[in-house]
Length: 542
Image 1: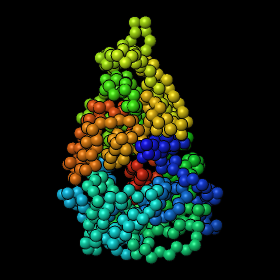
Image 2: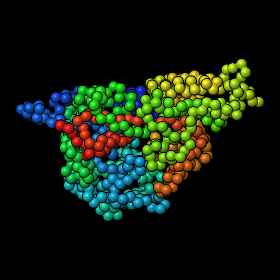
Image 3: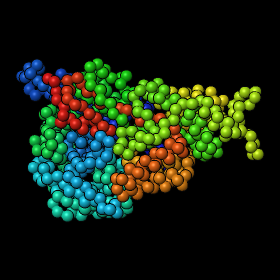
Image 4: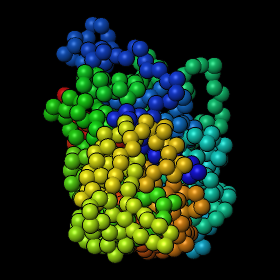
């Protein structure tokens, strides 16, 4: 039931249980870190005869053990963050999460939304000097289609019917169906056909070095020494001032230790990890990581089919206080699963303010009265008595959600609603969600950049057991949007309906941070999945 939603909650819970965000907690099973992680005083050493004072330490990052440096076959997000320094996507996202050209100079969708014509930049070449052509785009899509399901870019080719070469710098991509997110699905790295198609892999435990067109070229790699990157002199935009980058192999825990020890210069961390990092004078670049947190209702319970009860629950909690106390202000308030940073965000959605009196009035109107003798509110009907008593389900590893559950419990008790916090290990928590053994739920999932929320709020078996033909229509309008204006309108209507319907109580989007050593200067910016996106604007204070 709702497997995609459960998988999203799995990632969220694992993040919280390990005090790490998805980029630092996604450690492959059986993955071992290098036992030869370089010590701080040996990084960058070239010759024994060179005085230590004369050695300039390169920028040093970390990643998990890579299985493949072909970005279209890679399955690990930390490796992808490094490969983004070597490869460029066909389309990327701007600061408002809106698709813009990467290697694509332009991408124009047909009026019916069933095809897009992509024109490539003319100033980009591969790092070996070969031209980037439309054949490379077509080849890349074919590689994605044949890639394992677990590869990071697999979704990009799922609706692609064909990719036809128009000329050396133009392709026409045709889709099986109209899908509003198709521009977002063009965000895949393009790889050189002439290199990968003819590659004969040697018998080696190490992945083959990549060739891309990004800011850097990978010159060397071994598990023991990590990867050595140098500036790509043929890069088509601003070339980095930092000429060399070392990337050591380490898991998330070792990366934290390596940063604290001065072995690496940057660590991409959740806000919960900050307490375990020796920040000192380091640069802290916060960014929204896409984790949407909420209080959910089980619509399998007849009580929550009454919108007045849902609104009373929402009015009982002070969300701003939750953000301050549970998330230590390291989160942004959410009004829906669409990020406030998104170009699709609707700023005019009505924002609920805590109001216990209004909440009590709504419960009275719904027929739930407090007995004269006191105790929990009850409602008398011909079918019998219904007592307002809620189990609040939370995974015990998640400190923030435990605080949210306690705050919610305390607030509901002021309304004479009985509550019990059910705190379970994650896998029991998951099973109880799937089987509907809860009344209220402190949970969350990774909200996609494109607002496709059918997995959470539509269909026969969504996790909340929520059914609404009107919600299905809103989601369908988003999915079938043929252009930006239709998508913008559909997303706005979805957010207004979501807030009015109170499918769940939106709490916050969590934040992560890029922690960088004080010797890194410049305009440091980070984004979800791309902590080093503007490394070409960094410099080192040697």
